[in-house]
Length: 292
Ligand SMILES: Nc1ncnc2c1ncn2[C@@H]1O[C@H](COP(=O)(O)OP(=O)(O)O)[C@@H](O)[C@H]1O
Ligand SMILES: [Mg+2]
Image (cartoon, rainbow, N blue to C red; front, side, top):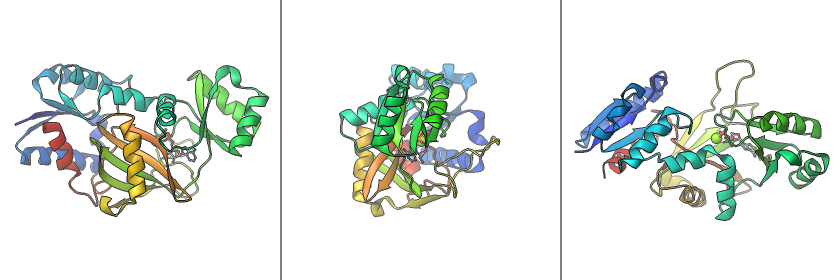
């Protein structure tokens, strides 16, 4: 019997689809004869009492979830969001540099330092990538620091704002698609495949409605993983292999039949009736991995 702690914050229970997924994890664990407890931040001193920790709260290196991951890891507990993966996934510059080094197909990207924000460099980038380009601050999630720029003025405006967050930015070729492929990977194996549709009139999955706190997510269309393109799955596995051996959600765009990685996310969201709708065994697979 494995004692599994599932680290959550209150907000993980605010969406009924996520709450249902959490209950599915609990059922899967208990069916396999394991103990499964939700662990809240008040009780993280209990981590040593468990054999493995499954983190569902948002993993940012500045958040409690990171402390949980690091503590569990150092105690030798099994975790699917290990501290190293969290660190790599939280930093786009680090991640893209790994993609370049290990030849993971990804969206054409250049890095821009604070002291390079001048006319010659901006023109060179527009010549290389065309217009518009996509500018990203390294520590973004939920598309918060990902914006387009179609001319030098807007390039400078966005870059100046993002340089307050970081000394180096990533600039990419604008690669619009109807959907992002999302491939769930665990321990070098594909767990599930779906399409995150880009909301109509938007270009980002999870684009923010201006002036409103709510994020509009596009539809999720799941495929049976056996039916998903081999090339897609290979690129997803290759991208994860440079990050780690845990649980990831890889965002991939399909461009003229090629698959290019947008990013690897640690701690991918799993909502009942969404990511799991064609591959129902994802709960059992994750629990098995945590109890091996
Ligand atoms: N170069 C690009 N061209 C077109 N769309 C992009 C590009 N980069 C990102 N996107 C869209 O924006 C979303 C957010 O970008 P991403 O790099 O994943 O940042 P975040 O970590 O904030 O989610 C992606 O899921 C994708 O839909
Ligand atoms: Mg993303």
